[in-house]
Image (cartoon, rainbow, N blue to C red; front, side, top):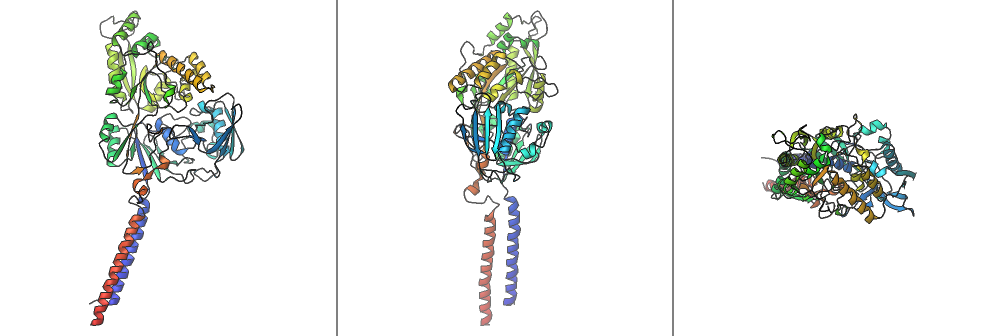
Length: 594
């Protein structure tokens, strides 16, 4: 028979065991309580350097890592405070003075001051950083004190006061040579955005950790991972099982299926994104098939593209047929195409254009030859292996070309390799696309003569992937970039886009929404940019990440890995001890009776 002393010892041991369990559980839960937001996309980050990268995924990474002087409102893209809280302009609008927030810091705790801003702008201008030049090429910045930036422009600039370039930490980037900067991938992990780089594995993933010194305050999510999926179906499967929290660039077929999943929210996010079939214009490092240098052949190709069918069959209706380049998410910059310039789908007309120009099938094999019976019209067509839509586009497009007597040799390449191929001019045609910035100037600048690849040692240092130079377009570009009257500027941009469409080297197919999905049972706080119609991730400034919260945390819980489990363990301990006290009392009373 146990004595009261022995029973008390047993209960004390039990209590110690429970408290120990609580401590161990708390330690394990601290590790499990790290909240990670995992995002999948089929494109991947081509470079972590904001100087040279070009993919949408790379811009998403930089939006996490680096701050901007001014921001863009999620609602309508209007210019709002970011690092700068306010700004004033001189009477002639050639000088703008910005005031920075007090106490700004980089993620490593070093002060973030006007010196960083001025150094970024001035160095980007002098070294002609690919992704900064369109904004800073006419700007000079000064830092009269740590919180004041004075920016002067040598020409009228309609983009100001917006300064939409990534600001870099001078104490990191300033120690490098220009060549080192051009190839630096941000491995230091120092930034001023909501998250900063923790690890980058090329062609696999980039992992970011929350920045404790972010000017809006530390995000509620601890880590963000941007993962590349070579198989889009595997990406969607990972979202369904919960391995991923969100997915970008979902195929239309999978998107329709995800609509039926009660745990998944689907988003059609229009952001100005468009796709085109581009033809090598011949002004780059290598010439295309000689027939493609003939505007009549390019015109015939334009009439062999059925945009309505492509939108219906390839995008399953998620898109809008379009004939001119999309240079902004705002529709005011997109012109109406005059009926006489429209490239209506008409195979018979396309055949007649080729016949009249002397491109005939002289040997009866179904393939036309150069005028006079020379080289067959067989064009090299590059297919993007990273795109779920590229192969079906190729099937339809090459089929239509075959019907008008043009053969194609299809080759596949991922986006990084295709970028180099295009720069070297080693292609005839390809299908790809753009997602524009809010101001049209940047995308318009890509098709100027100066952006045609000219250095065989660095064929990725360019943006004019049509390899076409039009001095008339360049003159219009220089006009619009200094036009402060917005309506007149819109008119100039419309003229530029109609002129470019007339080149026949860039056949725009459609404007399409970013088809995205996220686990609504996991995170909340997603923000559409622009409001109601835009995407929630891979947006212009990616505002969602800094606002995300775990669903259970937002509802007052702990997400399964916080204090709730500890409290439960403590309650168990109290109940056990209480039960033990009751047993002791009962046993002691019985003992006394004996």
